[in-house]
Length: 383
Length: 138
Image (cartoon, rainbow over all chains, first blue to last red; front, side):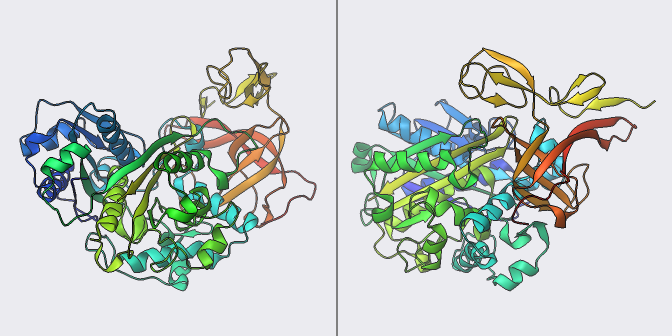
């Protein structure tokens, strides 16, 4: 990892996708202390941007005539950009490149109107399945099968809003209590608005390189070298009545594959995790699926405070999507940025002391033109 | 008479004057998928036959949406229904919120699910509770 950069996440209605992307790319270039002309390839994750954003963004930094790709994989779009760049470098196809994620939901809303996003042409979407209603069922399963209480369901939101107070890049700087969360407007029982991530604009970028390139060009000698040791993109399949939303195979298999690739035991070795907490209950359900604890023990794991700063494996010390914000395509890159900062020891007030191994995860899908397609993108970073 | 259309291509077939849900039963792996797509989505086999879905199923899980979604006004009860053949179908449940419990038996019905501005009636399916008492968690 040669350099990272991002914009503040939030409402940037006056900025275009290209403005946001160029700001993040430039920040990453400054951090890496290399010329953008060094890039040999570039990837961009985004859902709703105008065509060819990566080309339009990088020309502003004088980068042209290299292979560039824009990838869409729902909320795992940014993870997919990181994965593809990592794969190019790991396979020796190139030495250095940039992976960017960008989204402007302000621009999307101006074009398509506000409200819960349902996908055109999807049978379930036409019958009013939305992201909150899907995750409301997940919360209801957590309460029914795992004994979660409303306090348990709200806990990730309380924890992450608290963490976001210390993050200069986060959309919200406000703590919330369980009482305030449950007093906020109900979206889909038991999910209230303060259990949902906001709509956001923003961008994040990383500059990755080979080990050899790093030895030659890394100028920040005080930083311990951080590498991507495992990376997976995992997609779900057709579902029948044996399928359990508390055991999403794309997530379980993706985490297992990435950990195996990195030679990491999720329960013992992971020091910090950044994950897709689009809804508070989603984070609660993810602990066991990612292997941080045994299957069925996610609620007890959270109650032991293992996922807070100072705990066994802090989750979303950045503030997560709930407090940082969620510019869809950017989040998959942003979680890699935040894990990198943790391993570099540059995470400020939310530093996990001594962090050596971290996981960056994104989950996307549910409402697509095919039924219940889910994609999980997972990177394991080590130093 | 007003114009009528089906809400989603292939979701409902007309049979003997009424609308029914038709899926694909795979002769290779035995699974029934809905709505029907090109090949068996479980095993990629071409060896499928069109079958009508069971009309009564068990509510696996549900949620109640309290804000408007598209053409629908709250409260909107949506849930996954497990059919005896092992197929899981998403649908709305037309019932009082307090009467809906996971594990309850529900029966499919068809009818107008919304009306377009030009008067076109959109036909779809939804589920209603069976008369018998069943189910667990509200």
